[in-house]
Image (cartoon, rainbow, N blue to C red; front, side, top):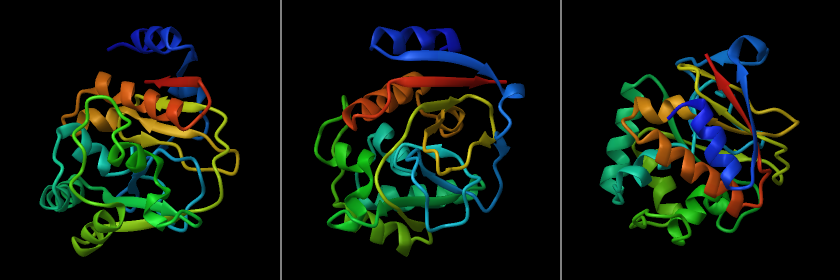
Length: 207
């Protein structure tokens, strides 16, 4: 799937989408070993490790797209992500009940609102506990959503950090690095933003 293909698909869904060169994105940074593999959620976090790949629901992206719905599979993914050089994580927020349901992607997944995904065999709280028991991280995000755009980043081993002026950050390259179908992944990302009433405005960053 080329960047132009992504633009065409998004525009067919009613989005506005543009392509931007990495050289023109001043706040694009390299991922580092301390960075969480964290959710695309644009809110600020209680964890300092923001220079890791941003994926749907953090490591839930891998589990959901592979159809691996058990806690044992989730535990194995924690180790896989660690071996790939990232800090595995899931999240909640400071006002959801229970707090781990503050992840919009997990909530949509567990309630069967996302196309073509088998439902997880565990609750948000059970997933949180399994990730922590396996040595992963649970982060708490703060406040409400106020994202103004979706950034789809196709530049390998780079990301953008959360900021006060919120945006969804979807590191599309990370899906490919874990063997996921990038086109399907980006389709789920678009559906997730739509179901969360997010902005239908995308900026696609290319090398």
